[in-house]
Length: 223
Ligand SMILES: NC(=O)c1ccc[n+]([C@@H]2O[C@H](COP(=O)([O-])OP(=O)(O)OC[C@H]3O[C@@H](n4cnc5c(N)ncnc54)[C@H](OP(=O)(O)O)[C@@H]3O)[C@@H](O)[C@H]2O)c1
Image (tube, rainbow, N blue to C red; front, side, top):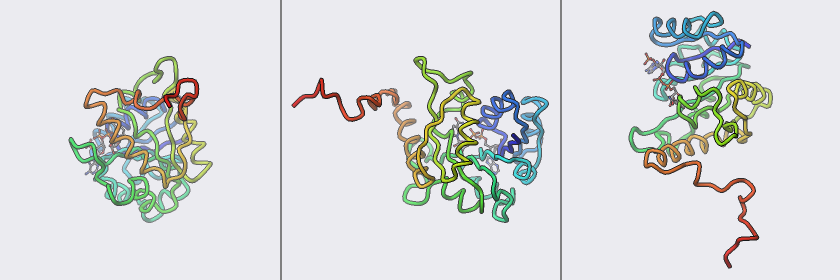
């Protein structure tokens, strides 16, 4: 498929590398045209660089991979408020965290995904890829203890979710349905909490029981 990428930084590089290898056509964009061109060259012959608006127009699917504070300006430059992304799958991987505090800068207001959906009229927004560090996404594949990394998706459009599910599988990961876009804020908060644990040296993976013990273990219950 044709994938437009808004952003020429780490996430654009990490995800774009997998998708180029999987045979998708890519257009990368950034505020620094030379940086976008360098990334496109590194991604290979299936990738080229363009402006924000060109990348938005190019992609049947568009990845939004810019810093949270740049989202309104970048979406405006892409023409999102004028319908440039109408009908397109728009993947929002952004996180809005107060530096060093592991709390959301969006606290008390709409999630990043909601803000994106409000600006990008008619886009089919899916929240994905926000939980893990870029170097996890660069792994080929991200498999831990023999199990593919599970990637939760939040979105309202079944077709868009199916598209993102296939892009998740291109990374060697397994998609998990996380519910509608109204749950994307939970995914954003989960990221902040989990990253806070990792930075304190705790194993975020260990804080929850395996699914079969989600409601305890009748054979080993203290009464
Ligand atoms: N990196 C991770 O591990 C990770 C993991 C999950 C989610 N995320 C989220 O994914 C998004 C992208 O992260 P990233 O690591 O790829 O960031 P990044 O490496 O800093 O790249 C972000 C892109 O946004 C551009 N940008 C920054 N400020 C801008 C502005 N004011 N106006 C226009 N463009 C601007 C950057 O341009 P320049 O290159 O010119 O600065 C670059 O193209 C962020 O929202 C982040 O929270 C990151």
